[in-house]
Image 1 (spheres, rainbow, N blue to C red):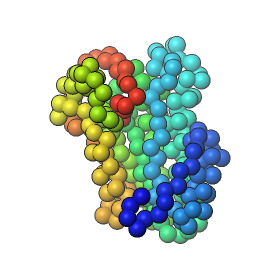
Image 2 (spheres, rainbow, N blue to C red):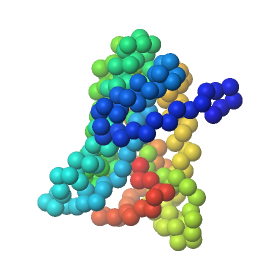
Image 3 (cartoon, rainbow, N blue to C red):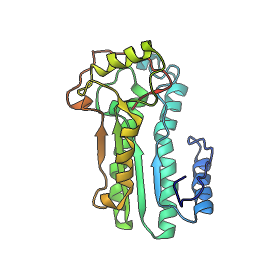
Amino acid sequence: RAAGGREPLIVPTDVRIREQCDALIERTVEHFGRLDIMLNNAGIGDRRGAGNPIQDLDDADWQDTIEVNLYSTFYCSRAAVRQLLKQGTGGVIVNVASGTALRSSPQSLAYAAAKAGVISLTKSLAAQVVGENIRVNCIIPGFVAQAPAQSEEEASMRAQRGRFITVRRLGEAWELGPLAVFLCSDASSYITGESFVIDGGGLAGGVAPTGWVVTEPAEVRHG
């Protein structure tokens, strides 16, 4: 809570379920009186067998990954737009995708497809609601360490991954925040329908070995 700010509201939500996404927006408006910003950041990597070759990919594993990463963005964005139109005040939607969507990702078929959908949804939705003073943009993170390394082994693993990123290190979670704040602020009032890569130059010049499979601890996020 910032000085002079209000108490935060925490609403546990299963973003795979449309009704819960609608309820999230309703509770937010009840608590704060209005909605200004929707940031869609829910996501999971390929669960269970969702990273299997397509011939071995189970329907349920595919569906679970798509629902959490793509359906959630659609459900929450739709609920947010409905509220913003009702208010007539305009607003901001920021989606979070992944660099995986912009490169060949043979080990992350479902995840890559879902995040590519988020990027496309961002562009099309931005064009649809631009006349309502609603801006929609997207952040595309790369590999981000969400907490300090807990062991020498983990630090070594991160350093090894960092070798394949242009700046030779993983990103830190705090490095994503300023971009999100900027996109939610009036300073970006002339920006909509855009996707911003923040990956230490990974897509620009970093090259991972062909067929590289990443097994990640909980505190390392494959953006």
